[in-house]
Amino acid sequence: MLKTVLHVSFVAWCYHSPSCSEITWAKTPGCNGTQQSPIDINTGNVQANANLTAFSFAGFNERSALTEITNTGTTVLVSLDHMKMWVAGGDLPAVFSSIEIHFHWGNGSSVPGSEHTVNGKRYPMELHIVNKALHTGIKSGDSLAVLGVFIEASTETGKPESWKTLTSYLAKIANAGDKVRVFPNISMDDLLLGVNRNKYYRYMGSLTTPNCKEGIDLFSRTVYINTSRNSPLMLNTFRSIQPIGGRVVATQEAGSKINPQSGASTHSWIAMCPLLSLLVMWGIMC
Image (cartoon, rainbow, N blue to C red; front, top):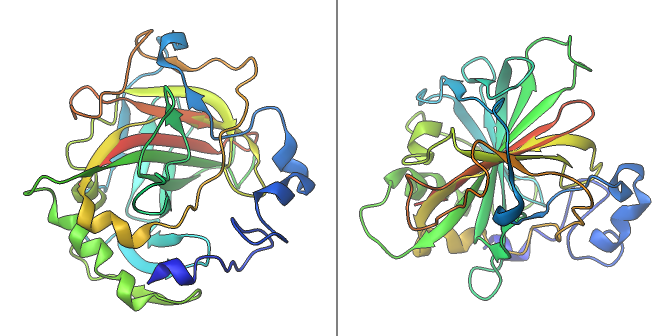
């Protein structure tokens, strides 16, 4: 259903139309920098960093925090009650309030759609949790931290019903601009069930859509969702891999790898921006 409408965007960029697709993004001042995201994470080259401590998550068990789902024309965006969810720790310079989640995906079959790749592997989907600094002493009042999650397809039964509940709203937002209220029966903890949020990779990167602001930290993890549930969200809404250049990817342990078959050993990754936009990536199997 969404496959026919997500080509249209409310902003001056898109993924597929020749007039506004990724090939034109370089005209946007921030999108032609040297620290762009996403990248391919080569786990053999990651370096240990003792400052990458555990994260603290408050309100992620709050079932009324997910308030509204919107078809923006370029993604599916879930608004969060910013007064109910916070992220801190992990060497972040402040406490961050969670304000939204959105998705990047492929075509549901031949083209997986995560933005970042690990050792060349692209996952079916990527989830971003966008957070905003609660105080402005770090750089700017618009300082952001974006937590990211790889989503892997699975044919197993018994996976979290939260994803079935979340995707059930898609039929109500078939057109760009459509939005619907979310009933208070899903929490972020439900969606991230089984994810170890304190194992992650980190590097200096950027926002992955215009204006492509640089200075973002990223961390990754994997969640598994039943394949019958991820297909409605697929339409190649991801940016191509960007050159890593001389950037260093860090983790708690050098040489750590993401293992998509084991929730306990899957890692997360983070990337940092000038106004401290932080992108955090985990992986999810639903």
